[in-house]
Amino acid sequence: MRNFAYTVVDVFTDRALEGNAVAVFTDARALREEEFQRLARETNLSETTFILPREAAIEREHGVKVRIFTVAEELPFAGHPTLGTASVIRGGTGASCVELDLLVGKIPVEFACELGPSFGTMRQRDPEFGQIHRREDIARFTNLRSEDLRDDVPIQTVSTGMAFAIVPVKTLAALQNLRFDYPRSFEYSQGTDAKLFFFVSTETVNAQADVHARMIFYNGEDPATGSASGCCAAWLVKHGVAKPGQRVVIEQGLECRRPSRIVVSADRDGDAIVDVRVGGSVVEVARGTFTLS
Image (cartoon, rainbow, N blue to C red; front, side, top):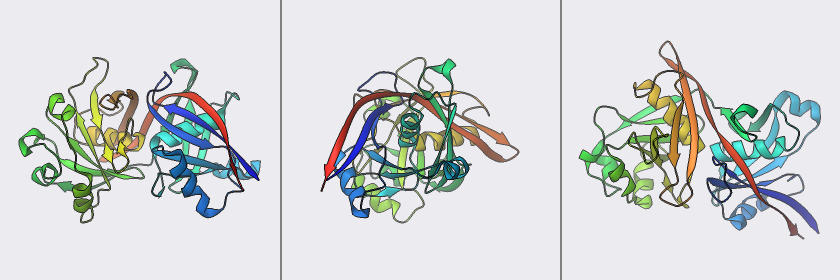
């Protein structure tokens, strides 16, 4: 029999049973290829990660190798699994930085004790800006009208490793009442460069937040989407909604009763948007072992 230890952490929260959960398998070297996806389906979380330890010298140069799976597929990058996995690797060592080797490349996660004992910040890849989408096309797979979407800033695809269309909604009420038809959105996305859709409003529930966000995909509503939040930070700065280097707090997950707090920023270098950072707290909630034959 083969035993595989795992840890479950809640990410983008400092309270257990809030934020977005990820299961982290701490040594997946003995897994067979098909078992990665099967275990991700078994945990049934939005993402599950698998650490593949290597020699210390290789990890110092390239980072700790990690694979990320949803219940349906392997991902090149995802935000809350990156932050959660880095926190598990950091453990009680107190390391100030953990570097992960993901399919998308090396992603550093820095920990700052002054922001909390488990507050980490990842630096994402520089963003790529893609297609601009028509409001009426987006409205077709929601209950929103075109007039509910802002017309002073574009609906645009942004990628820092995963592509999201950032969809600005005029009011908090419209965003809270959003109904989303995933099959129709998937059909639309096949002819575009957007993989998923991140709906945002600058009207918020909490006075301490700057942006209210929602993201719904094939596995339901996501309580916190770190990859999309980085794309959102880049979009905010590019289109003048936020200033370069400004600290922006995104609230997400309120509608699915998993409140999350995501702290983001992005900077500008001439016409380029750079230095995209996404941070939040991590809380350990469970440990266990899977036993496979």
